[in-house]
Image 1 (cartoon, helix red, strand yellow):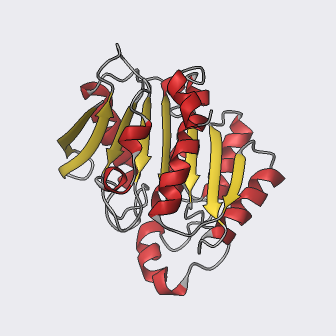
Image 2 (tube, one colour):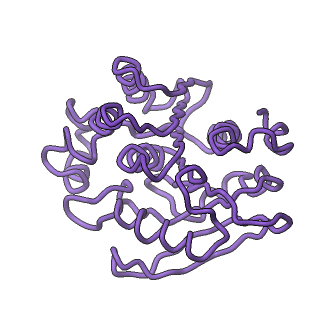
Image 3 (cartoon, rainbow, N blue to C red):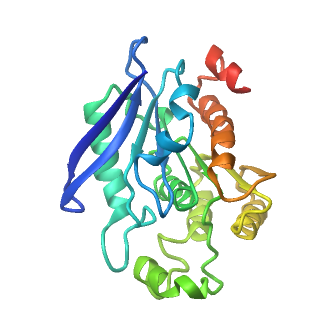
Amino acid sequence: MAFIHASFFSRVLAKESAMNVIVPENAKGPFPVFYLLHGLSDDYTIWHRRTRIEWYVRDLPIVVVMPDGYRGFYTDNHVGGAYGRYMIEDVVGFAEKTFPIVGKRSARCIGGLSMGGYGSLRLALDHPELFVSANSHSGAAWNFAKPLPPERRAFFKELFGPKPKGSAHDLYHLAAKCKRAGKLPKLKIDCGVDDFLIENNREFHAYLEKIKVAHEYHEFPGVHNWDYWDEHIREALVFHAKALGLHKVEAVKRLGG
């Protein structure tokens, strides 16, 4: 695999941004792509620094794009940057013009952890025409019908506005909208049983079951840390490989598929 650092100009944010990209070297492209999103306190380098992601995909015919999402929750902030548009227009736009990527819904998946878990679900449910599958590890799957955590209420108000329920920030609203439209990406959600976000994930899982949105949901031993995410990113890769039609690749079988 080739490991590439790329700097690019974001027209949406009007500033330089960056991503790390893993590209197959010994196979002929173009390839499917996996957009892999970081959490609130990290940046585009973290997946490569804290996990063995490059080793896990070493024989997979897939490009992995790890962009900087800043602290914007991958959504258009009420006060601040349009991080949802940035992801779609700038990150996807730049990556698929620059690297050997197929650039079709059937070859495009997305995933992430914590803030990035929320972001991957939000982007896939808001743009089901773009992503064939999405996964969330320990995602911040807020139910905006309930009060937000008081210690972060001011910050979240800047992100999501005073009334996020029913908006493009609201996973519950977006899931129901996708269900009505009849175009849903394949979804996989997991969380550690001792993670502080476990109840958010259980509640969102129950809602998806209630409205009959097909998805995978798993709880595992673990907390909100890199030991958990490094272990379960392998399962996410198997999940996406099946959605992308790569499930017969020998490297997927080694990952447990």
